[in-house]
Length: 160
Image 1 (cartoon, rainbow, N blue to C red):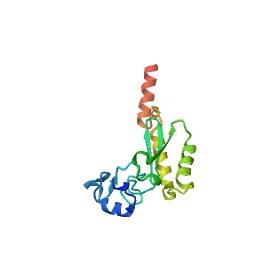
Image 2 (image 1 turned 120 degrees about the vertical axis):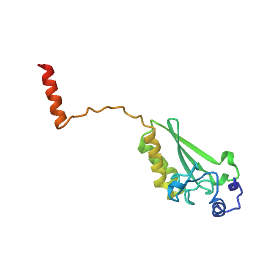
Image 3 (image 1 turned 90 degrees about the vertical axis):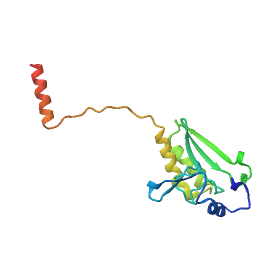
Image 4 (image 1 turned 30 degrees about the vertical axis):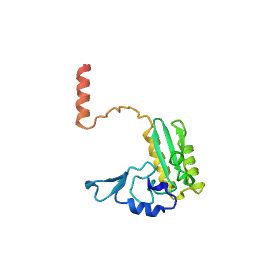
């Protein structure tokens, strides 16, 4: 992609690819909103702030089986696409608070895109919740009013 050339500014890359790129999603029924399928876009909104393909520093959080993967883009390896991304993964047994703390540490506390801290924690939370096992609990429906009276009468008639 065009971001491999070091002397082109990210603003110029975004300006050239803003209206047409591989990650852009345009739909007629969204009321003019444009979305992004960029794996390094935390909110899936098509905007300069969240675009991972043109920013030298970008963060992506995704689910991979039972793990949560945090992907960061290393700005000093912009010309080496094979080793440009740093991956750290957390298993499903990792406590939520530990996961959120490590996401904050890797984004904001090290001075790496502190503006994306809240979005990164929200994305990690959503991925973690999506991996939780769904409990199949059937609640017993409590009858009320006339249905409860009819059920009580039917039970009394059957027991007599």
